[in-house]
Length: 271
Image 1 (cartoon, rainbow, N blue to C red):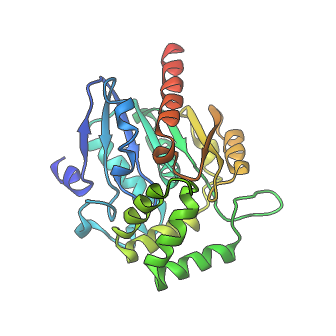
Image 2: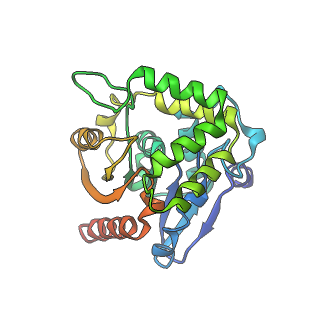
């Protein structure tokens, strides 16, 4: 247990009996949830962690082969659940962490009560005419090349596009600083695992109830992807919020948190 806590930099806070696990997305770490925590800490036991290779995780535990696909991160999450003896938790995943959570729920459904998926995508590359993911294969290759050649430049350019709140430049700077704090080689490997993945076939295997939270405008995940997920996940609710960008946990923490609280309250009332 102690080894996993140190490896994934696990922090536990909050006062409630119910467990809420927050999983960060690509290029980030657990501090990305800082603005949302106050909305939950009085009623939930909150588990925060960093995937291996991110944040303050144990970088010595990073293995490029293990984390060449999302299943390495799925193994991280399952290890955390086992170490903390967690059952019937609510998992809140941002971006690629949404898919990590879904894949973990297929392997161990009894560990999860429900899923909250913020900006999820099972496939980022288009597969036309049947599927629109938002990117051509060439777009993804150019993104990966830029990360390798000029990581700081990639971070600066993409932070602005991903945040999409030009009237609040401090948010863009915070996101850029978060990106730049990560190891470039590890982040490129994580980016490949994220943007080259295709987990559409696994979606029908998900049995855990899901809330899909989609921003009104998102440069990474278009509305079509959220609607696709909603159709494929048998027990899901889709909510489109007013926030712009890919990080409502930073730009609209109150609206995002209240929506999640409402979903969880409804789910508990229904038993």
